[in-house]
Amino acid sequence: MVKFESLSRLPTSQELPCSDDTPVDNELQNLVPNLLLSILSFIWQERQDWFLGVDMGIYYLYENKRQPVLVPDGFLSIGVPRRSGESGRLSYVLWEENNIQPILAIEIISKKYNNEYEDKKERYAQLGVLYYLIYNPNYWQRDEHHPLELYRLEQGEYILQTGEPYWMPEVGLGIGRGIGTYVAWTREWLFWYDEQGKAYPLPEELIEQERQRAERAERALQQQQQQTVTRLFSLGLTLEQIATACSLSVEEIRAILE
Image (cartoon, rainbow, N blue to C red; front, side, top):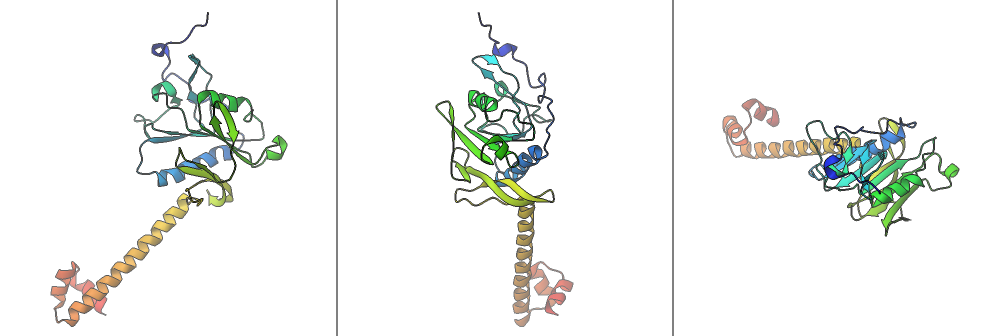
């Protein structure tokens, strides 16, 4: 007779290990998902219904039995709180997340092969992860696969998708490769894409764009102030009257007129 664990007896995230204690052997396994997290934090900054985990354990049930921890390099869940508790999540425990499974799981292949194309794929299918992405930039020829493969779960089986960047309508984002500079390292990375196939910029690019926008706005304001001050002065208003009208000091008015 199979003995099932009841929900009341399931351990909490405080009681479970946060990962499987297996160290990564390739820094891309951390950098790639962290870059995706950084970009998503900009483009979804107003949303509070998503969570992107990096090297975090996922705990779930299959056929009413608790399964061994599953630790993707990165995963995205939608429909869960972005923040959970004062200290954040220690791991991703489905029975504490309204049984909302990740919609996307990401694995980056390293020198040591960990059955990402076989056993892990089967486990993600059991979990019900809709999209499974395998990024294999260095060992794809060894493994006889493409450098980037995205699978979609259809009737319990993963179907290889075509047409990079891959659009995921259920996520509202595409994903694919691109060249960029992150942590002072210029190379190929994974990026989020919009529906038109345009990559969302890196955080550093977004900051630079915002700086340039602020500079343009400041120059436009200065030009407008100069035009207003010049016009009021030509109408015969005193410096004090212009300063009051423009919410500036008399010294600032003199500087504009010089």
